[in-house]
Length: 143
Figure 1 (cartoon, rainbow, N blue to C red):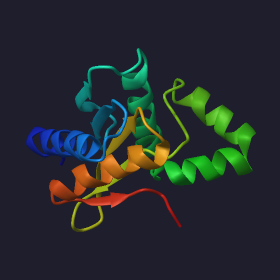
Figure 2: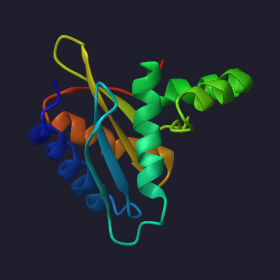
Figure 3: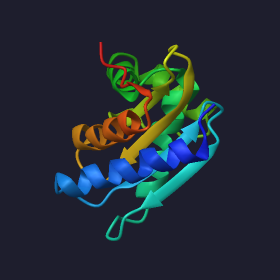
């Protein structure tokens, strides 16, 4: 289970990493393995819908059980399938990097982080820092 305390550690550390690297303002969402929101924050200066995009990155990863790098590849290789899946999950699926699965030491899925606001690669960097700080394993979906 992903505790609120660990979710808050992920959020706090991801934001700190973003400031350390001088990323653009970020929105970060941490979901549990069911896709329920544990915590969400948007930095001052984020555009209006960044939080929803961050949730979509995390939700898409949890819904399909793969990191959003895999979702990105799937959307390129099979766009009709991904359009259908997006419909099935109520549109809450953003298939670009920045949606990272969170796994425990045994490899079990405990949640996902979604980050939006900078480049997708930088969003992912922030997510990875947060997950590591919480003592958990990140799964970006990279091959």
